Image 1 (cartoon, helix red, strand yellow):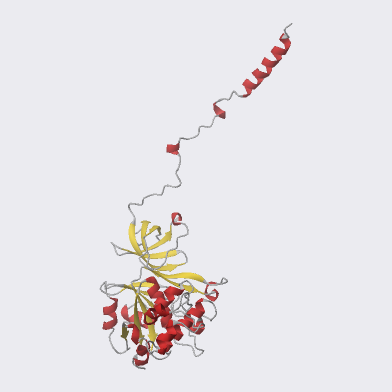
Image 2 (cartoon, rainbow, N blue to C red; image 1 turned 45 degrees about the vertical axis):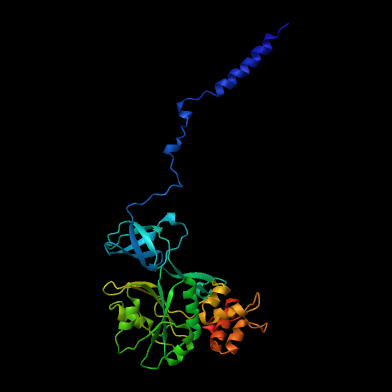
Length: 356
């Protein structure tokens, strides 16, 4: 006997389920097709972007010199750059208001590939954080002008050596600029670098800067030096009207920093660019490998082929080829001493300032 009541009950629950799946137009949400959805990985091409050179950086605002019009534009970083930092010397692409009018703000949307990067390792006293960290000084420099005074303050060959290592590591040509030639002669300093064939210029306050201008022409040069060596004075003479702050050396010994930020300046007559950097007390090299550190001393590097395998060049083993070179009179012992001071400071066994 068929139980029709049970069958009707099953159809009754099916009808209830079917009625639950019946929606009206207010309940329907149409999902847009793929072609109409925003594609976050696609970036605008910015075909109308204007090329510019970053000449100054100040609290998230970038002063740029545009290539064609030659105007000065204030810009900010576009969000699409992510964490890519922008530094003085960078060639960038700019969109937005590039008229250079007051109270206008453009956007940096792209950073061109850098041809060179000059870096130094800053210590925790500068950065306010524990340990040491790498800091990009400038980008795309072709020449590093190491400014050192011959008197008041005296030349610091340890600092010059650090700058030379950084220049060679970044594949930038070095130039030694000796200031205050009216107070002392350059013979002793030049004798220290006699084996390097290091190019140099000598300046005096009472003579034109023709020789220095000739070395700067047609190039992007970054100028670096301790406070009080006359770097800002040189900049003011090279580019009249710049008004870079000029200070004196403190009687305590370390002096005070006169320039507080890097600034790129165009030489009169469009002869080239100079980038003035803040006066610094030390030039850390913790980011430079031991091999690159040795290559910063061309007068010593060839003797390393006479070293035993895995030589650390500290001389502790007594059979370092560098010691043999000095003993034979092939190198200045002061140069070897300077290299080993830098090696010790890189390994953290010597204070950075004490080796500068």
